[in-house]
Length: 101
Image 1 (cartoon, rainbow, N blue to C red):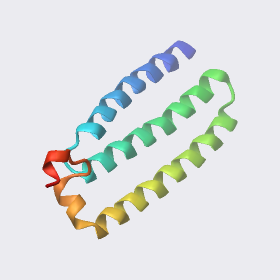
Image 2 (cartoon, rainbow, N blue to C red):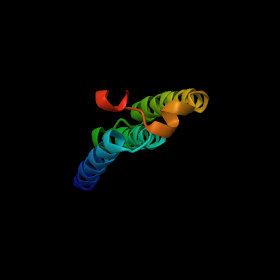
Image 3 (cartoon, rainbow, N blue to C red):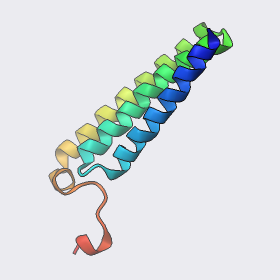
């Protein structure tokens, strides 16, 4: 049974890597925020899987809930920031030096 959860954890890490690529390449800031939020959600699930593998689900569920709450608050803060800064929302978060002129 632990082999199943280890396999699922590795698969989840691969999906997190693909989402990380999307977070770096996203055309707008909103795409990047969603990418980072998805990584945080998958990390929460990964923490629960680690708790199942080690047999300490109660401790890891508490850690994952705290992490999920921090992820949610950070996503709300970033969304609120980009709501008030329209120029960053339309052009993208990272601009190359030659594009800033």
